Length: 200
Image (cartoon, rainbow, N blue to C red; front, top):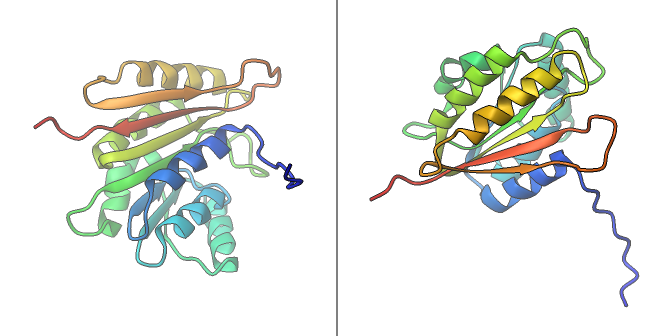
């Protein structure tokens, strides 16, 4: 029997990474719509490689600075944009390869870790951003949404995102939900959406 140490932990963010590892290829285009401290941005950069394109967006200057430092430390690069994710199409369109859309879009809702916890994602702007994301996805592209509910306004936003995902037309999108059943401290749950190709 192998003595190799088992290190896999069940986490919503970890499952999002597993999905994208299976779907993204070198040369693809990906968007980190709430880049925070840049961990997902760096992850996407490694998946799409130097020939790919990663666009990272956040409303906070502090987040853009942290992401820049994070990816530079790892020898990576991406397009960094300060702005609200509700304006996603206008923010990212100048950086999308001609004639291309995104193969993956990631959201981590809530607040900036180790940042100002009074600055949080809001239901109205988040739902607008998610609607925009569906139009920005390539066929077979994947949208991941890590939903955090353990802060003021988080439960209402999470409920709204759940309802939004449940009402996506099944002919156009496949939707899965990944959540803990036995945790007490409001752990995040994940919603993943894959865009289906147009019917011939």
